[in-house]
Length: 68
Image (cartoon, rainbow, N blue to C red; front, side):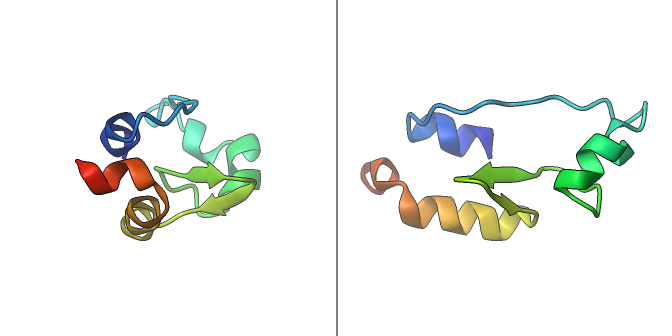
């Protein structure tokens, strides 16, 4: 997913979670994604939990991808 954003020249913030330490099951992360799944993407305040659906959405809404 980050590769897609990089290809589209989109600025983003990436937050690394230590899954071995259980950070994806922390109360803070579970407030964002109750399933505790990664990747989790937030676009304009809306949380996207399914990576395949998120990739399709990004491909549709990022006009800079259409020329690559």
